Image (tube, rainbow, N blue to C red; front, side, top):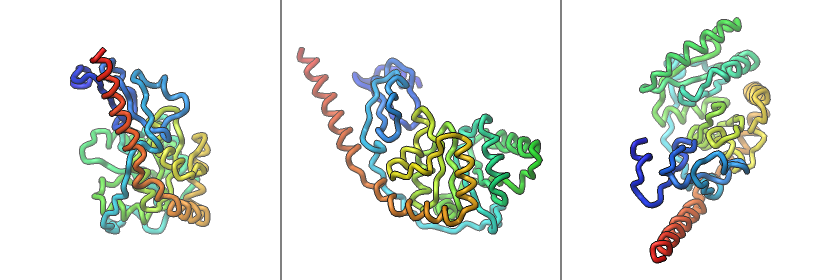
Length: 276
């Protein structure tokens, strides 16, 4: 924040590593993407909004060596659907606790799988809060939810290949979690938000024309998650569509070319202003 609040260059820009406006008069532009923003996005930013084509990045699949994790060692069952909830703990607002409870109840037997990042002080707060909510609703928390340590990439991809579904975080979406799941052929369910921070996974799905996996309401999100967890035929169809369309996510040079053109235009504009 100290650096961002300082005028170190004539033109300064931010992008969506943190998907929000900076609120700083020292940042001139915010670089985002057409597929990630609503039509009325410009007023969401104090910066001038720059929209790069599609997802705004040239992404390549990770293609890691995959290692199937030991489910028993992680405390996970091997005979019920595993619904992955891989968002960092701070993304799980108390306002959405009832969503996870509804999914666990209606999709039972299943297991919601959350992760414990090693450096997060929010971990115990989230786990304790959910345990209280499930207990108050008459559900046995340990039968519905398991928190596991963050896995290395090989075992995480192995778990995704074993899982039934990835549930995107509500209100603060995940880009990497969504696109990595799609690389594994794992269906992703999301609820599109109003702002960029709630539209990352939906932007990925829209790029693949898989809008049926984007829930228009929170209740639709629950219904879609339950159906995907329980209906094997529907889930298989979603997996087939994902594997058919996911290549459009990779190797797209248009955001890079557009960014180059924008930077060159900025330089030319500044040069003309200096001459004047």
